[in-house]
Image (cartoon, rainbow, N blue to C red; front, side):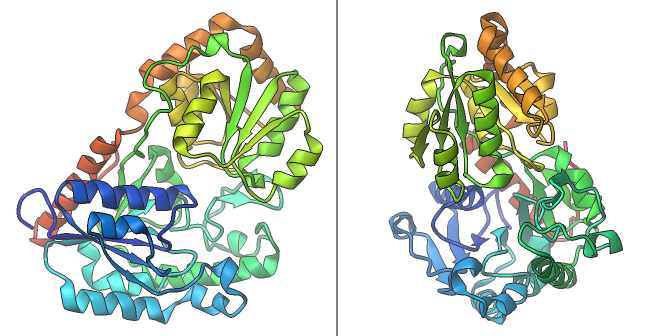
Length: 420
């Protein structure tokens, strides 16, 4: 590879339209790299239809498949190993690969399957994988025992893991996930320093190493963060609490609603998901905004006093927490969130066990009733937590540095990365 830019960047991701954080970041990366003059190919499992691709000159290659939950039972086999993924990627690599081409993998669990690592095996020195979650090592992707409602500390694919009924659906589904994980362990082979795995928070290191990823493959590249407000929101003058996120059990919107009611404060929920009907019925006192565009979220949270992030299971990053802190909103987060230590350590909020309704409500009540403490948390979040994330431009430059080093590695200069 010559210079700081790759010959071409191939972004590999299940889908082309963002309904979650990983895809949003994959699309942001494509845009930022095109702005820097990098040729980009977006390799995806769906039909690759996104107006942004043509507008920005992004080449696409796609399978034209639907995600597993939409494709029906027949897709369960291809979800373990999709031979069409191998054919698609191997054909592209055979026709277009150069020594300066970089492959960046974001998501594969819904369509592409672990088979993609078979195709990428021949370019593993130039492959980078962002660990948005724990699907690289954990069958259910979250190091979560959904049946017990606890964080999982087992060794992935060990006897205790395989025999544990921890899946959110049923044990048969856990068996299927375990088979898929075993296939992935076979297709995704780690040499001493590659493929590179980018952690979005340094606390991901222990569980990823526990799952078998060599330490030298791991490097921390925090998520890009765009705050809701460039100026500090004067949270101490506001009285609404806000939840922003997907409305499903692992995110804990029901815990937020119950604790807010117990604390006697107003709660605004921004987001949508399967829990919406039940939440509306159980909590008529809550204001439900549904899913909002980013600029609408930014306007709505200006009247907030604090953000509630009561995830039931480890949150690898928690982008909304960073967006809130950088905007001056204190955060009350789950103690299992990887950002929890940072939130408390920099005085930007509080942490608790959100399943303990009394403790959660007490934390809410403290912020609701103490303007001075709220102001201090607001200022701390706005000024002292900037190192926990990157601006979009800084994120793009950090990625380019990783890609450049992959090119040097491919030329014979092998480096072992360790997280900061």
